[in-house]
Image 1 (cartoon, one colour):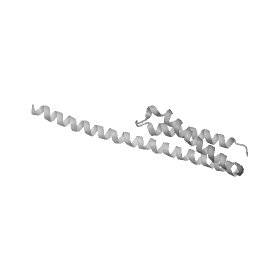
Image 2 (tube, rainbow, N blue to C red):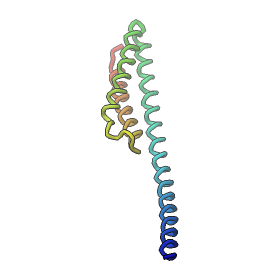
Image 3 (spheres, rainbow, N blue to C red):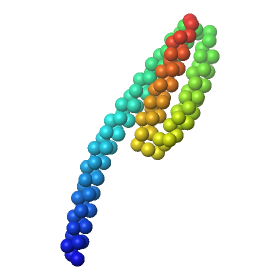
Image 4 (cartoon, rainbow, N blue to C red):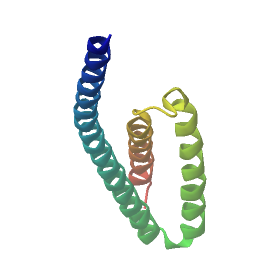
Length: 118
């Protein structure tokens, strides 16, 4: 009977150590992915803001309309990404899914502003 308890105790310690090592690697990979996605979102948003600023410089008389459109577009993108990524909510993939959605939509918005006539 003691042998069973000792074996159970050893297997528990071994499996806990194995899970901890796996979780550490997994957490490191997840942090790396999330960091990359965060960087991509920031870059896409910076590029978008430059595009909007360029259009405001080219069309100063339409500044309020351009800023209003930018604000409306952001609200739409936030709602759209919430809806499109609802299946990943609460999972490890949530941040990457939302980030990828934001990047693609920010790039689409940037193309629109870049195509505006001065």
